[in-house]
Length: 202
Length: 202
DNA sequence: CCGGAAACAGACTATTTAGTATGCTTCACA
DNA sequence: TGTGAAGCATACTAAATAGTCTGTTTCCGG
Image (cartoon, rainbow over all chains, first blue to last red; front, side, top):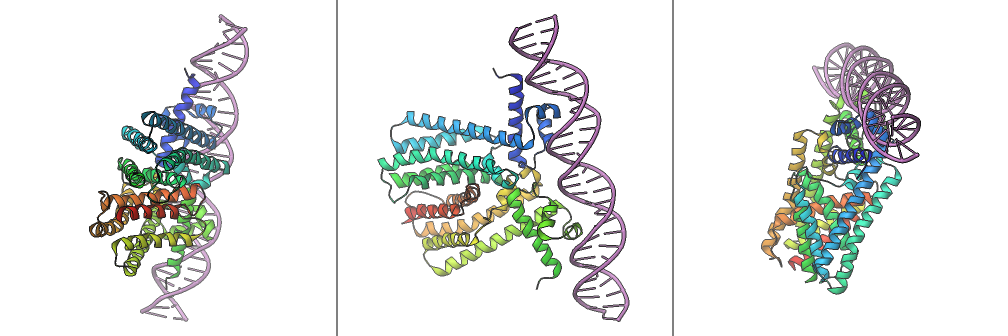
């Protein structure tokens, strides 16, 4: 079981993440977090050196959680089918299913949020985001590589291009879902991408 | 010719927009703008009631400029071809061409930026963003409607779905372009979307 | 059960930042 | 050419906000 301190730290991180997604990092004050967690200054600065330290921790936590999630989807998809095309399609559907179950408040992507105020962060934070996005892309790319080998696509297309495309669609989807207050937006776009794949590979 | 005051106001708006895209709205201070424009408090508050007023003005200016740009691309595309498919493809290429010529600092979308700190803004600002996005989508959607009527797609797809898809790809493209510091990202994704259309309608 | 460290509370400080008050300068035009 | 308004400068105020300091409570191993 996590110690008391680790639990509070986690509560702070959770509050910080959701507040960041609503107000941006610069727009989030430490008092916002204290209010959300019913803690005090002393508690906060016991766990984090300063606000930048918190920002970094939120980022790393988000990256790790998301990577775990995607690896899980990937494993499950690979267990559910042997066909490379089906594996990709199931992987995408698992992600859509996950989004369906989330409900409000609709989530967002910390990478995108931080990128929209990139000048607030140090170089290494931006590098970390780049690397995380590369890792994300890598998972997709590997799937598309085996897919392209197994099923020749109708027109010439690389695994990397497809990986970047679904990444783009997901990031864009989160924005539009929030902007239009329409929780189904991202899923719909993911489905549209599946159509494209079906057209390409069948 | 624009009066002196109008020129200053425009300079402030321009500085505010680019600063917002780099640091977010909350992360941008009025002093940032004064430094960028070599103006003073007195000048700023002569033109804008407060910071929220500035935010609103930046938004409206961005929306108007972008709408003008898109309508221009649309008109030019319609003059360059009679075929509905070609018109859409040319329209997309004109946008890609425009992005190519922009150079650094790579631009972004104020709609997306504001959405990432939506809680900072009043209800009507969010409504305005929604409406602007709808207007954007409308331009695309109209093109896809005539396209679908003229060329039956390989699989069933609505004009609205395609319009939402390119919107998503563009928004996502801007984020990834900035996150990965790769100015070609958005164009590459737009090209990928053109492939999809070609596959669908030819 | 005790001693020290981890965990937390709350008052306080320094700085940043939006916004104001007042006055000076430039410009259109009667 | 004078006059009022638009345009702008600068010193100032009040509030917000990150971070500190000191002290108290809780926990946990010896």
